[in-house]
Length: 217
Image (cartoon, rainbow, N blue to C red):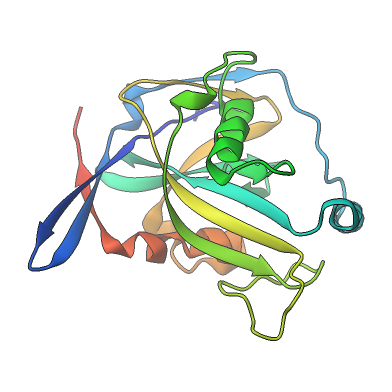
């Protein structure tokens, strides 16, 4: 598999019987170009380092808000999710932390451009960020996450929002050399908490309200 991958999901809606029916057009992976670029430095060398950084950021800015992209591609006539792999072990959705005062959509566009576009390409507005699919909450600085905000938690430490991202018909993906961009079948991800963690393994359920329209090249 090449260093980068790609996908496209255009969403159209049609109404029927007072219900909105959503369809995601999923385009072949072969439509897109994937290359590599210079590596970005890692921020989280250890879990202790990450926790300490989160504490420092919380003290300075309050609640940490992260935004992540759900991008689908077609491969072998099945929907696949694009995932970044760190150090050949950790899987994550493309995205990251918002800057203070930054909107969800602008922040996700910035993060996608930084991670998956050529350096200095200035294509942030080209990323079509769609609806928010779900939200996860971190009550404390530990790793435990909830798909809802527990009512007894008054000061959560992080909110993670997942957005559907629709891609154009063609795009160049440039991935840092220290990362891998993988296309993983949804059936492999579904409820596979051990490998992918609670957020990624829950994506197939978040997509259950959509119908998939596989478009062959």
